[in-house]
Length: 104
Image (cartoon, rainbow, N blue to C red; front, side, top):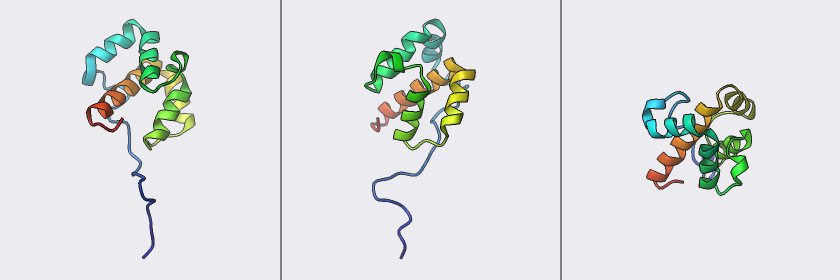
């Protein structure tokens, strides 16, 4: 019998909300629109990173890798550069959901 999955690893998934699912958490959306830099600092603090990293492509890529979320560095770059508020809000929503599920 062949082993097809490494022990302790979980299957790749997607973010728990879509990029433009603003209504899933209106508070986070409003926070991002009113104070985008503050939202970035909140995301960075959640991930135990420097506040300046919260709005970067790197933090999205690190998060995606940590939770085995489908995507690529190129896609992360395009999402963050083309729609930075949406990308940061999506990341914050995902963090909050994982906290609620006790998997963060």
